[in-house]
Length: 337
Ligand code: ADP
Ligand code: MG
Image (tube, rainbow, N blue to C red; front, side, top):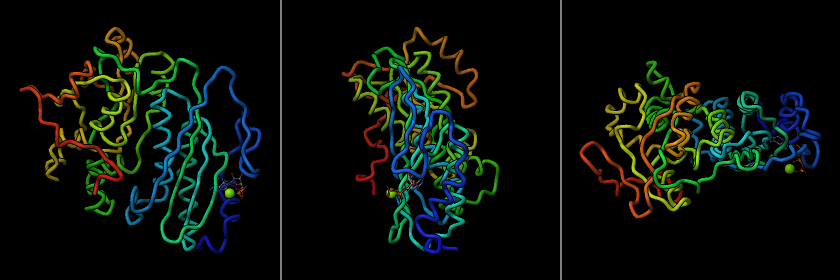
C-alpha cells in the first residue's frame, strides 16, 4: 500500500495508534494544535533539532526503515547527551514522497519508538508534508537539566584531560562497507561495523551522569569527526589541545578491516564522522572519580590528550612528535564534495 492511499491524516492516525500511553507529565500529545507538558521546577529546557535528508544522510538502497527510525532519534539523543541533559519529548517532521510504502513508514516509526522508549522519550507531535522526490526527516528533541549541571562546549581549561567514550572510526568504515556490500555483512566484524554506522548508540546515561556529578567542564558529541568536533570545543573555550594518536580508541573490527580499505587507521579515527561518542574535558583532579564512574560504562572511556593554552593550537602527536594535521578536516555539508 502506498502513502497516497491513506493520506496525511491516515499516516498521522497510524503514528498516533503506535504511540505508547503518555507519561504523567504530558497533558496533550498528538492530536491537538500543539502539545502541552509540565515543566519540572528548577530545571532548564534543552532543545535540539536534526534534519536527515535522503541522498545526503542516508541512501534507501541500503538503509532499513527500522534502523533509519532508530538513528533519526539517536542523533538527537546524542546532542542532548552532550549537554549532560535528560531527554524527554520528541517531535517528528516528515516530508514524504506520495508513492512511499506505508509498511516502510510503519517500520520507520517502530524503530523511532523503540529508541524513544529505551531512552525515556515520548513522541508528542510533528508535522507531515509531501515531498516530490526525496524523504526528509526532521526530529526535534526536548530535554531538561538542573541549573549548573548542563555542560557547554565553552568550559574547557588548559591542563584539563581530554576523554572520549567508545571507539572511533567504526561508523566511517561501516559506511564504506555498506557501499561495497549494499549493507549485507559477511563476517561478525563487518556486521559490527555496519551496526555502528546504521544503528548508533547515543551515550545518554554517560552524558547525563557526567552532568549530574559535575565532572566534565566541556563536552560535545562526535558527529563530524574528532578533529572537527574538538575544534568546536577549542574555539568556544578559547583553548588549544594535544591529541595523542596512539591513544585514540579503535575497535578490533576496525583495526582488522580498515587496511583493506586503504584507510590509515588513526586518520580515519580522527576524521570519520557519525560515531556519536562523547568528547569531554575534565580537571585532572577529577580523574579518579571519572574512572570510577566509567567502570559501569559498557562503551568504555579513554583519555586521549590534554587541553592546552590557545597559543598552542591543536596538535596531533604520535610517539615521534607532532604529526602533520594540516590536511585533516571533518565533514562539512557545503565544503565536502
Ligand atoms: P496542523 O495543521 O495544526 O499543523 P496537523 O494536522 O499537521 O496540525 O497535526 C495534527 C496533529 O498530529 C498534531 O498534534 C501534530 O503534532 C501531529 N502530527 C502531525 N504529523 C506528525 C508526525 N509526522 N508525527 C507525529 N505527530 C504528528
Ligand atoms: Mg501540520
